[in-house]
Amino acid sequence: MDVNIKKRRKIVSYIILSLFSLTTIYPMVWIFQNSLKTSNDVIKSSFSLPTSLFLDNFGKAMIRLNILRGYGNSLIISGVVVGAVIFFGALAAYALARHVFKGNKLVRTLVMGSLLIPVFATILPVFEMMSRLKLIDQHVGVILPQIAGNLPFTILVISSFMENIPKELEEAGVMEGCNIWHIFQKIIVPISKPAFATTAIFTFLWSYNDLFTSLIIMRTKAKMPINVLLTEISSQYGTDYGLMCAVIVLIIMPVLIFYLLAQRQIVEGMTAGAIKG
Image (tube, rainbow, N blue to C red):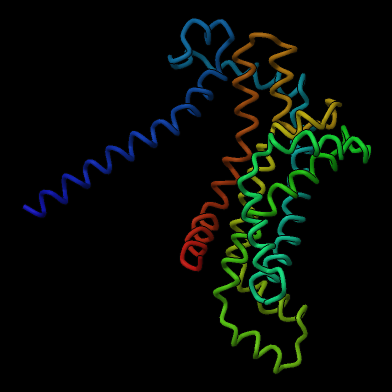
């Protein structure tokens, strides 16, 4: 009886998980199949499979919107953001997790509290600051807000990981004559690599997908990241749905490839964070 109940529960779990997977995967399949149709075919029947491979949409997207330049701008912005967030986040997490000082709890509370502030509530003061610094329509004007926005999550994850590193390792380092920087560099950083990998992956994805900040700050098409180019389709090419789907495919393709290459590190990092945290 118990065995039958377990089997039924397992079957129900598989059905629920399969339905959930379908709702996640099918929109991507829908976008991809419509990227291979003309705009009229998309309007007539967007749920049917394409009768032929209409690849002109990808050619138009590459030539008219200069997708490669958009990729370059996105990589510049996301690469700098990931490097800065990991560097400053690791230093802050090390100070908060491994050292007792006056105001430690207050800083932790402020860091955690900042996670609750939506980006929409900060965009006006951010825009004012970027305007005064003359960083509007500059990559740096997008990079700085994204660094600030991603630091709280990074500090929280890495500090939770560092808190569980045995103190005996640091004491052994002190006995060997290491100073604080050497202990951080040679002991803490190598052990904390799973947490660094996890936060780096999520920071890259959030930065790459951040359309809102880029729309507010950037003005020149040649400097825009690739996700902003999607807005150019709606305004410039009207209702060309096939072209729009092709651009969406080109935008999400690097993220999918990145996830497929780094999925092992993502799972390991999240598992390590869950255990250590």
